[in-house]
Structures are given as structure tokens and as C-alpha cells.
Length: 206
Image (cartoon, rainbow, N blue to C red; front, side):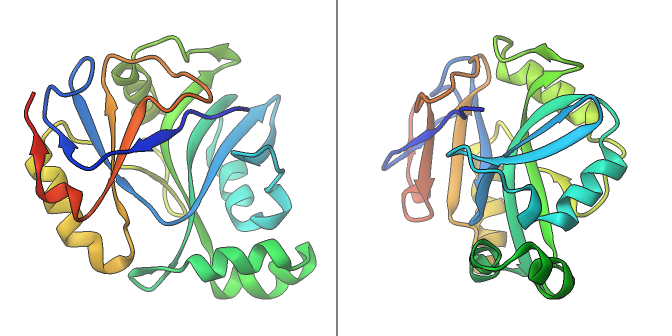
């Protein structure tokens, strides 16, 4: 499952800076992950095609309990240590066995999955739909979710996005990702933009 990517920019696009209007999301310090549920079987895949299912048994269990429809999700795997993002705990999962993760790492530092896009639903590919339409369907799908599954917040207001970043910057949130509400999902392309907290201070008009 090839995923769409983001390119780094130096200034935050304005409200109408991307096709269909800009949509702002927080950029988490985690592992990009596609969740694929098909015929009741759920697998977790990295952006490079690595099967992460055994590395995140806690997230897999939550998905099995809460994800009731076949679908493909795009999102981020993160670990919270209190109110701080703990990237080191994610790395520990990569170098330890599945048994060690189940017995020690997952109970001590449980992982969460933050979903921000829906690529297929009921085995129907919806990547050709507008981002705004895909996110509406994702929001409906995610209504009954509870931690460790969560929906990434989205806003069309750059001022609100800056407020989010100010509120969460201490936690390890890296910056913002901005996408065009009218755009389709293009695997492998860098049509999204990402910007660190310093660049968020300035906004490109338009």
C-alpha cells in the first residue's frame, strides 16, 4: 500500500493556498502506518511495506474490537508517555521480539493509532474522491472509536492550527501538515506540504 507523502516548505499556506482550500493537521512524531482490514483480517503496514502487525499487538487488538467494516486507513502510530510523545519507545518495538513487546513493552508504553485519511471502505477504492469527502467518511467511521484509536483533528483556519501547535508543541508535535480539500489521494507523490513550528509563524497569502 503506497502512501501519499508531504514536501517541506518554509511558509504556512494560507486558507486558500491549496486546491479546494487548505486543511491543517498536526504532524506527529511517530511511524506512518496503513491499516488494512479485509474479510475480518487486519494488518498494519509501514510506508515502506513492512508488516508492523506483530510490533503493535495493542493497536491490532483495538482495531479488531472497534473496526467493524473492511477499509484501508492512513495514519500514524505513536506512543504517549504521559503528555509527551515517546519516539524512543516506538524504536524499541522495532528491535525487540513479538513476545517481549507483548509481555513488557506494550503494557508499559501502550501505542495509539491516529487516523487522518480513508482510502477504501467496504472494499471500494475511494482515493479518487476529494480529501474533504474522504475525511467526512472517516469521521463517520470513527464515531464509536475510543483510545487507543483516535481521529486526527483537522481545521481550515490557519489561526486555529497555530493555536493547536502552541498547545501541543511541548508534547513533541513537530509542526503541521497541510492538504488541499479538493485533492485526490496520489500514492507516492508529495502533494501535501509539511512545515515545522518555526515556519508556522508566517503564512503565505492566498
